[in-house]
Image (cartoon, rainbow, N blue to C red; front, side, top):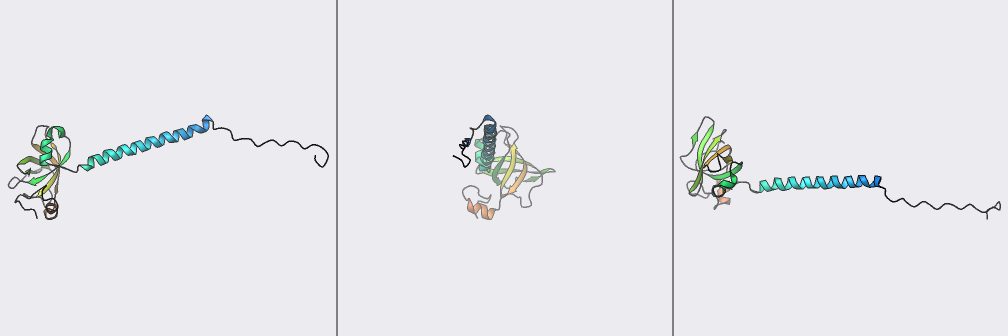
Amino acid sequence: MSVDGSTPAARPAPAAPSPATKATQRPRLRLAVVGVVILGAVGFLLVKGLGSSLDYFKTVREASAQKAQLGTSTFRLEGVVEPGSVTRTSNGASFVVTQGAEGFHVINVGTPPQLFKATLPVIVVGHFASATSSTFLSNQIMVKHTSSYIAAHPNRVRAGDGTTN
């Protein structure tokens, strides 16, 4: 009883939280879908980017064995510039890269690096003229520093004079 003699009014019980409605679930679902799409896109880009960078170059032997698969796609080709094969052209240089007894004629468009010469290991960037051609069309030559590279990889590439250091 209250002070004035009346019975106290019953207090209403606190309202229970209402279950989530469709309107409040939609933003969460959208956020989850966007997150999955973003993670999928990032994963795809990582796989594609890392996949192509894992094979930094093909050796002359590898490119010869995979010529049909490589076709006219652009890749990096490693070999040694054959002595006596370098010819300067008005657009760049023409030469032969070899690995052992195998080799490809390279036609390079652009200015060769200052250190470029016969007997040096090089990487050329380009593609075969056709899937059956032994001519490699290049637009970039990268010269390897023989003193350090050949010493580090003696069985991969030897200088034209047969030295490994």
